[in-house]
Image (cartoon, rainbow, N blue to C red; front, side, top):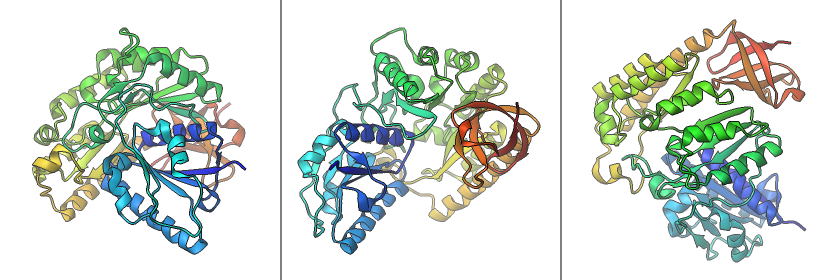
Length: 448
């Protein structure tokens, strides 16, 4: 009988794409998907360590698997993959929790072989202490990860174009968990795009820690703007998104590409992290508040209908109330359509963890993030209300979670729109008149 696998993913879009790759590798090796842990021979937990909360989720989940195993008298083989696996390595095997395989970010392509080494069979009765198989080596190549992705989304596919990062922002663990920056050959990327389209996907999302730093190792003429042009030229690609660009690599060529290529969505996620130049310098972001605002003006001057979103961290070491007020004023000046906000947490090995005391209290961090999010909710609702009465092209990607007679999709600007319609609309681009604004989405009616 075919062995069954279940992958649970904690983290970012890159983690979710790594999960698709692992699923593809396992199915190429003869595995089939399981619906629950009770039905699985192998459970893979794909982790993120950018925020401390994601690590806590891993340890909580391992404890749940241990408890479940003791209740049922068996447990599946457990593999921990991703950034926490890379960061903690052998330490994960000493915590008294059920871990049989530890696979780092650059060893994903070896997952089936590592499972074979671990023995594959569930234990009965359950045992906590098997000698785990560990591979957290930083394999320095550009053929990552290998295999054909098993795309889980019905309309979009993620394609990683860069792995790792060379910037070493003082708060960021990525260079330590995913290694130095490595560019994938453009020929491999386009092959991934064509495969995704052949599988019925119409939206391609290009991923990289600093996605707009891309330069093809197999074609000196192909920078990120040129890559957007080449992906758009693949027959069947209807939309292109990318995450996350860095402000200092957002060139005029890239702005023009977003403006001029029809398939490229008119939405830019542009992480700022703070509105204070003093804190940006401490973060090693290599841009100032003024440079960021000037870039926003250039983008909006070239693409009037663009929507912008961002990331912000509150409570970074040394952040005063004045620094935080500068963040609030930048929020008001830019008026983002979307915001991902985080309370600063110390990450292992980072420059901040070694050089900067975590001197903003937990209570103050909570107060600041609540104030930031309240301001964003007001701005976001005002922006969504301004869309009422307009007609938007929506890519339908799912049925509504709340109403069986409705479907849901996203505008080019990445806003969710719900409207009456059937499942047959999934994967189609349709015109929708916006009739109502909610705090995080729009409602509308299908035209035509």
